[in-house]
Length: 279
Image 1 (tube, rainbow, N blue to C red):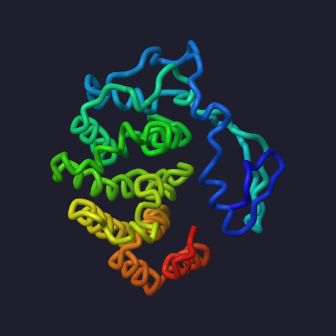
Image 2 (cartoon, rainbow, N blue to C red):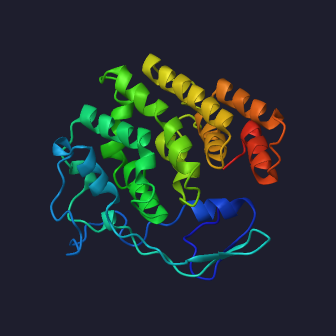
């Protein structure tokens, strides 16, 4: 990707197109603490320990989202940036998300229930609100709060495994149904896994716990490729790139061999995943 943050009027072509559409700059408020705006519902730091599922959904999703038109796309997959989106509400608060009180097992349960019941968001929130909420949960603002329990080997394995496997109903019931949700369906595994397995020094899990996480994710990506939905397959292809696991790559090969997978864009991307030069 070109260096720097693109501005209004910049264009992106080819492989960088989906990257630019799905990953946006975080805005000038990244990493800063700004006085909270009076329209925000949560004027004090939330306490995740006290939230039931309804309260968690309100915290994450029940906020205005940008609903304008910021890009235009022509028939050659060239995108022109019309304007930069304003920062999401969760950057404009009076606290650090990493300091929010939370119980890791309760947090795991909330995020898992969100993934398993994600279809309940449809019709209640706009696709932009849904994307904004998931970017809070899995993105850089609050990833340490919501996802770090997944990697804590001191916690029981069962709830951590359930969270990983709950990504299948997340795609099947939400992302493959409300297909206009931006960014998150393709980038989910990028946010969860990062580059911990793309780094040559970390490609082979360093612990038994890390190994079983990688094994479960490989199974999940296989299941998503078998769903072969409008976002489950592309999301799983991207996940296979980040996981760097033989079984996941084998699942990509099987997906490519299936009759009817004739979307040239995603076939080319799958081939890049197998070569190891995908983005």
